[in-house]
Amino acid sequence: MRLTPAQIDAIKITAQEVLGVDAQVSLFGSRTDDSRRGGDIDLYIKAPELHAPFQMDAKIKLLIKLKQRIGEQRIDIVFAPAAGQEALAIHRSAEQTAVRL
Image 1 (tube, helix red, strand yellow):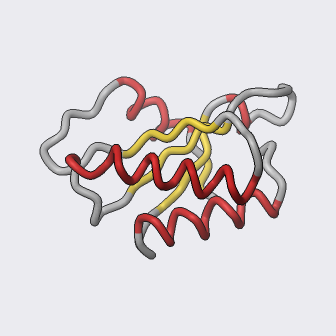
Image 2 (cartoon, rainbow, N blue to C red):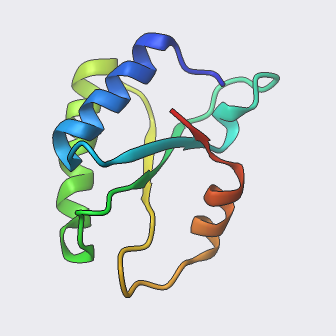
């Protein structure tokens, strides 16, 4: 996994502040492969208390706080499907490959 311990801590703490203590954060995509270089930070988040209409606001708040803490990084956030939402290919891919932080 190509994140520093400080980045991992900042991501977990920030997710809990914005989304609540039950939020589970995982890394997926190229940063899970130690043999690769570069790439954005792809986060897959399960937040049981976050309902679909509020996901965009939460995503913006989370991105702002993360950039303040870990610096200018390309960060993509994918929320697990909320109740009533259909799972998309990106959700299935993240579920299969993600590494929990």
